[in-house]
Structure formats: structure tokens, C-alpha cells
Image (cartoon, rainbow, N blue to C red; front, top):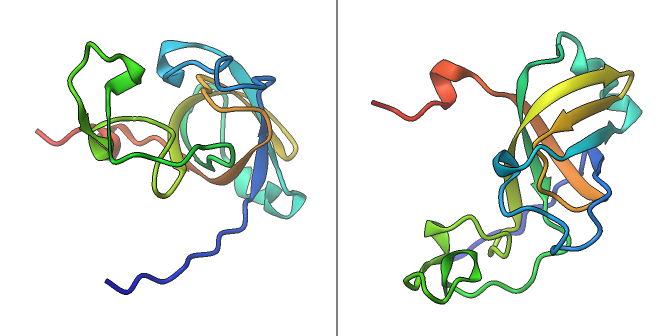
Length: 140
């Protein structure tokens, strides 16, 4: 299969204070840790209309990931059955992009305070999208 390389430019950086993988929770939804999304000033106008209380998806590049294996025990628990990487939420992925659902707490110029982050400090932010209940909920 002929795959092309994709180059992405981050729109900002995530400031969380979480320095190591051991500091970070397995899933942001299981923890209400807060962090600041600091956007490059050229993207600040793109925050227009965002209000506290809104749920947002953060797409980030996991710049501190490890080389993935295609099968693993979920959450590193050997008591759980071995499964394929695409059946897990491990950050160690062939293409290390994360999708994290957060809650917007505050907007300050080109900065967003969000809760529910499970990412390390200085993680590059690739995009921000609003959570849309009718679109982002599982199909019935």
C-alpha cells in the first residue's frame, strides 16, 4: 500500500502541569483535571462564540508516545484479554493523535481553560471542535 506522509501544524499548545505519563489519568472523563489551551494568536478570532459550559473535542498530537504494539492488554492489565490496538484507547498508536472530550470553563483572549484533560503538559493541539449532542452521540 502506498501511503503518503502528512504534515500538520499545531494551532496551539496544552498546558496541564502533568509532567509524566504516570501523572496523567487513563481517560480525561474519569478525572476533572484542568488545563489551558493556548492558541497561536492568529487563531484567536476562531474562538468567537465559545461560551463556558460548552463541551469541546480537543485533537492533539501525542508527542511523547511510545512505539506501539498491535496487540496489548487494555490499561496494561495482564488479567484482561489480549486485544488489538484499535480496540483500545492506548496513547501508543501508529498515528499518535488523541481525541479528548473536555468542558470549557473560561475563555481569555487566545486561551481556553478546560476540564477533563488527560494529556501531558506542552502537548501540541491540532484542532478544537464543539461536541454536538445530535451528531456526536452513538447512532441508534
